[in-house]
Image 1 (cartoon, rainbow, N blue to C red):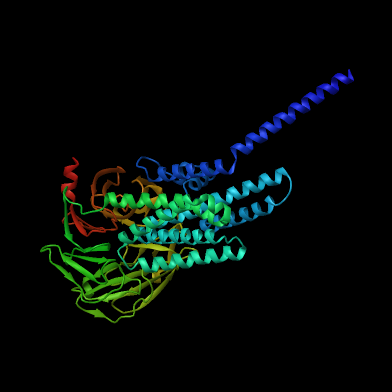
Image 2 (image 1 turned 180 degrees about the vertical axis):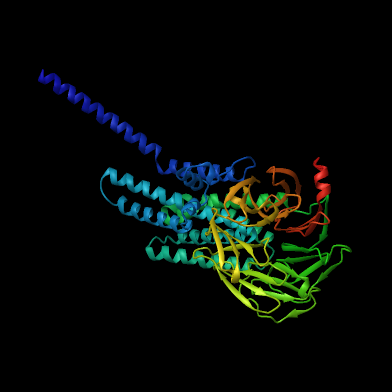
Length: 565
């Protein structure tokens, strides 16, 4: 009996060893570096397609528990931006995770024993995965914000790292010093390329860099065996692996721009100015003028809506930005990278008024005598009184920098402000000395805003969430949202008719929505780089600024073509 039990135990042990070995081999095969790499790329690719594809995808907080919400954004290659749901800067969290897991992987891989080695490989895989998320998330978000600069910058550093990496592989440098020098060389060469090429036409520069990158990739593929022999460093291999999805994303975004490029025409749309790469348009009903700033032109201009005459300012305004018009004071305030500029209404005179001397993100008319002015990073808004010349500082709560837009409220002097990037808040500012500040969390990337006081709503564009949120104008609580699709950044309203106008930056679409019914009424192609929109409520004309010029769209004709009365 004892012998029988002994044999049975031995058989069970042998079976367990065999099954364990088989299971271990299966785990090693499934979780091999190659399979993890392929799975990561497929997940990232599917997530990007899901974000960009048309349809009813909505990755908002309302549709998922926090854990699933975080998972969705992680797989959406947005660098753990969902952690902003808890108010944590995503890039820092991602960088820490990548660094800690990478360090743990390097340490554990040096330890003896199968379990520790497996943990080490898993840690390294996690580090690489989050490194991809960080890179792709930065590029993905950058394209949404400033497509040409992001494309040019990404391609510059991509070409630089391929060039420096190929050189390092050729000379066989594998020491720590060689790795440090290679990383420093990549940064230096990439910065130099970006600085040099940004002075030329972006399309030609991008084309040249595409050709250069393709050549380096082909050269690397041809020299793969030799590179292994002479010892290309692991850092370069990791960077090279990251290059392909980054390059693919750049190519996809660039192709989307090319598809939507060119002059738009027809369907109630007419071109009224050749001002290229328009940054802002602002229509003033009292003057019947449309003021325009362009990233291609270091000045400002206005177009007479009645005659079509175009007047260009003789004064230089380097990198002009947004516009606020004050007919009561014969003033046009124009923001720029180098501060706020004050011009006469005819743009012939420029006044030496030291209103605001820092990079101006937005300037908005908040009353007949007051303007609110915002910088990009800090949480400080300047309220300027044109009658008295006094400035008042309005400090928003700590951690609420990165202001994108300011919108006038229904009360004189009061206004709203939206935060984007790493600060997921919306603000309402009013009261004596602007001391009554209401701040509400609304999630990541709040950009264009528009107030509809008759309906008690504040509309907030959220391009990554594929929607425009409808907030309570007083409490800033979310009352609902309007599904718009990916990429809507700038919005405008017809407050009396309850219409919302949206611009999809990449797709080049101008859409009209019924705010009450939350449905799209019409869509019109206006061309790539649709960045600015202003509305003539009396004439029912929409003015749109794109990379190819300024267009006027007849709202009545657009709606009639779509069967809307």
